[in-house]
Image (cartoon, rainbow, N blue to C red; front, side, top):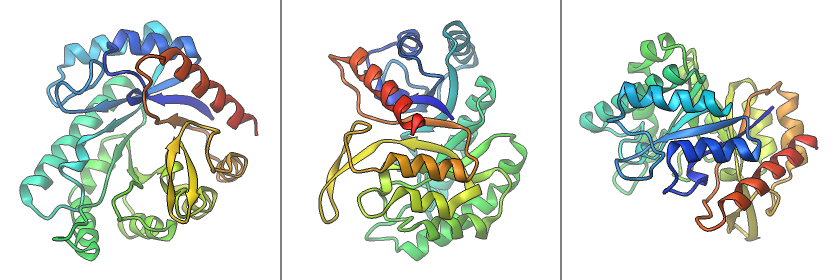
Amino acid sequence: MKKSINAWTIPDSFTFEQTFACAAKAGFDGIELNVDAPGHSAHSLTMQTTSAETNAILELSRKYGVAVSGISTSLWGHSPIGAVEPEKRKQGFELLKKQVGFAQAFGCDGVLVVPGGVSDELSIQAAWDSALDTLRQWQSYIEDCGVLVGVENVWNNFFISPFDMARFLDELSIRNLGAYFDVGNVAIFSRPEHWIEILGHRIQKIHVKDFLKSGTNAGTFVNLMEGSVNWGKVVSALRAIGYKGYLTAELGAMEEANDYMMMITERALDHILSL
């Protein structure tokens, strides 16, 4: 397995060059870039990023020897896969195509998408059915694009158990569609290693963060190795399913102590991989 970090862990003021430089200095193999709204950060991709800008970023990746490990985004919250409105579905498809285009340009193997849409106005059944319908409409594109499309488990009341996530993917049975499993996002109410065991071959990519429990269904996200996740069991479960990809740390940035944050995160990943 390889060490990666999501660009959200790096201060917003850092340029793309500073971002790749600090990832290389800390010893990361890869960095996951994000598609955000314009002005979100100096190292965000956007829906308006040009091919010339993309090529310049690729050159930085080569210059510093840090691969682009994946393409995430903050924009699925506006147009979740599961939305029933045609305009939101259209926006979602445009976002997916933009992510895939970046992945193809940077030579990375996967992108992150988020099913959901559950709200007071939309039941979980309606969101589930709409998400399945939406992804079936996108099936031919997903199967032909040559990039893995990973659905992530986030705090949106959509995937409540690993059985939900496995069933969702199995009902679709779309080539290239799998799970982008976030270890920390399930630690508040279950054990991540159990999710890995159930999801098995469906897992394409992994996000890592830690969660410190402070009571029944309570706690807070913390830096790696500072929480309640049993990393030895997580790594053993990943090895058992044959996972050999990136572990991408997705943590909060330290504006005044970025070098320290990068150092402790890289060392924590080293320790986790040694377990």
